[in-house]
Length: 352
Image (cartoon, rainbow, N blue to C red):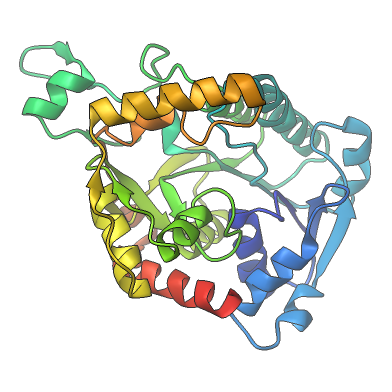
């Protein structure tokens, strides 16, 4: 039997549908008061018979940070997909992220070891990848600012963690989770790890990347010319399943379909909706003003900031990621970004 954590999130929900096509025994963890209807809605994007597919999932109430609740979830489990995590760039969420992302992952691998799980798949992030480049000819380490001016940054799985350049809460906690997973490999657990870029997929329109589609349907006016890696959630789910069904163990893989500027992405979303393209370019000055104003608003209202210092900086940074390792390992071809965007926009229009 397969166990999935984070099944009520974007990756987990799409993964559950893909698994339901070929597996009869699937168990998924959900927390009390979680929205299972949102998961069934994700199934409806794929098929008119979504209820039948959804009913293949055995849902069990548990929490990855509650050890006692996990004991019952591992009965008869052979394979684990660990997708659950908190994603936030708000400083006030840091301690909770440590608890869920690091301690929760430690609990999952410990139970997997104790129950002699055959294989464990962990969803990490490109946030844990080192963002500096080393030049072999001069043996010099080049800063982000210098590199963006003179060199093309192409990040792959050999880029090791560096606290100096990955010193924000989410990255720290995902790296901590990775260390728990690698520790488990030393204790005998067979593991595969994926590090997706920004994941685009249907559903959950009011948080995470899904909120991008809501914003640009409502003709959001701003864009930046930063660059990062993007990938469709369907491809994330497919590669995870293929890796779990392969003989590959104890390896990690970047999942990026295409490196794109935010401007290009935002324009494509607006075009797919037939809406006006964003017209206000946000540079460093405007970005710095925005996150500082949000910090003041957060101080007085207690509401989570819409823009943080890190997210403002990230929106201007220019990083490119290589997916050659996963392409070669599985002979995998990613869906083109434009196709992914059109499909997600079509699903969005069905829901409004």
